[in-house]
Length: 207
Image 1 (tube, one colour):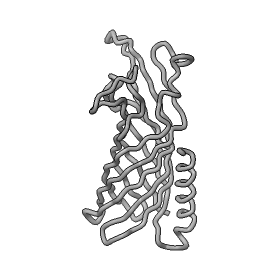
Image 2 (spheres, helix red, strand yellow):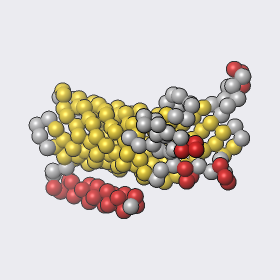
Image 3 (cartoon, one colour):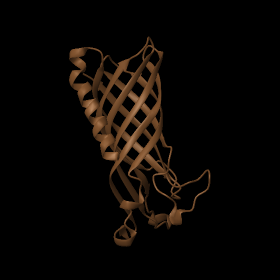
Image 4 (cartoon, one colour):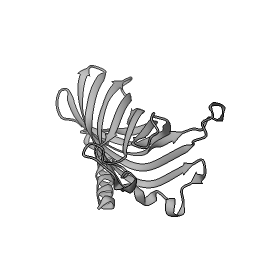
């Protein structure tokens, strides 16, 4: 199911990108940026895991101040805790989650060069790396199968149109469903597992 949804979304977006210039109905371009992320529920607070974002986007204006945008991007997420022997802190932890992410957002212009956005994104998990001070998790401790194969996140953000072709986007995403269950499947109504939170800055170039 996940692969079918991903292939369908990629096909649709690539089709739109290939025809947007000729049709002159869609804007389209490339995006590149930096993501910082954390996993709530893992006992390591802070947006300490950075990663590079890259992808493509397309958008269509649907009103005087409104437009819909769809993207496909590589989005790394995770968590990080560095050891500090000088402070007698020897705990080390690193989690990297690699996603192909497909956001769909509504954007509303509040000023000539500024717009707000909100929407949802679907993420397909394509890789996992988890390690602590003893090394990568392998064997019975391997985490690959512990994580959900897909992630649905809520998006909020703001866009600054710097030039006719370049826009800076500041965005926050929060998982709606857990990306991994708590150990031993322990959960409550308001805390069902570990969730992914991201804050990212991206430059979007329009063809």
